[in-house]
Image (cartoon, rainbow, N blue to C red; front, side, top):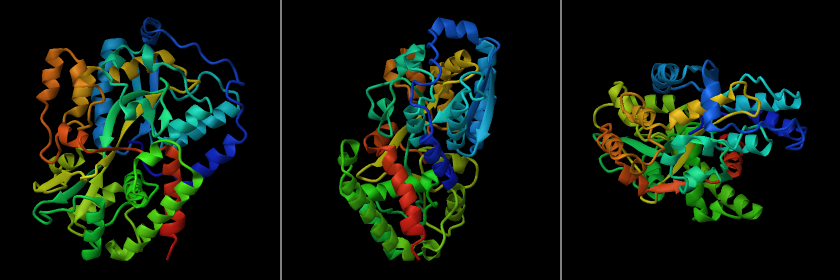
Length: 412
């Protein structure tokens, strides 16, 4: 689930700097990974500067209102949230620090990360680890899941630790649209039959981007091809078919496709105001959260496409030059504790789905997760898990986000 817009200058900066980075392994020797006992002993009194997207009040309340006090009480660790608009900014910062030879006492101790940002960090040796297998609470994680084992096609290899999962859901009002289109092909037909009543945030916003990836799978006619080896020609053909499809839909979109919402918040506002008939989210519980907050009416519900919707896992990672590595490991472990995962899943708190597998927990904890109430617009775990699609590799994500700007937005 990472988040949110990626300004073009960040792409350019990462590309330019990557050509001048040292060869991985040529810099100072990598830190020896601490054992769990060493991490706990050394962590007391340390401060973890956690760089993360700060655009969600619910997430911010969970971090500062629950995690920070619990970590202080249990481990003597001070957790300090450092909000950023996009973690790509932090990746750029790490690249500059690596070039400058700043191999210790870095300002970033922990990052909320996934996708192309993780791929960039791993490619250029910007991460501490592998550390995930040192964390006791990893015993509750199902590492056989494709979205945990691989992050947008990049093997995790213990270089980041999962702490939540996300799946795209469509949002609609049963009072307005009692029978919503249940597949991408049906949605395409609906958009053309109801001009002006659908839109999506402009990529590279992550929510708009995930819908484009659904159209990509539809236009390509396959999901499996992109999980293995594919040729540049295959990608070009599928991407071009995607842009053709999206351009064909433009005149039927809100404001004739001349403009797009700049964020999911704006799209939700258009939906709540009745200007469009659908919203969607890469967070299964967002509609329920917005009902609780009074933004959406009680009649709003969510659904997934018959062919499935894209899902992913979000992670935390520790930079190679983190100052307080020990405490960062303890924080990553606590994020996977049954207590922290349960609190995160409460609809009134955040409603984020657990990354630990309840069947791996002691029976009393299994019962707590089973009995956890869901928001009225949130689908059951069984319904969601039966309709999951994998993310394409991050290289495809980047190609589609840049291609959308060049071939759809600029195509007047």
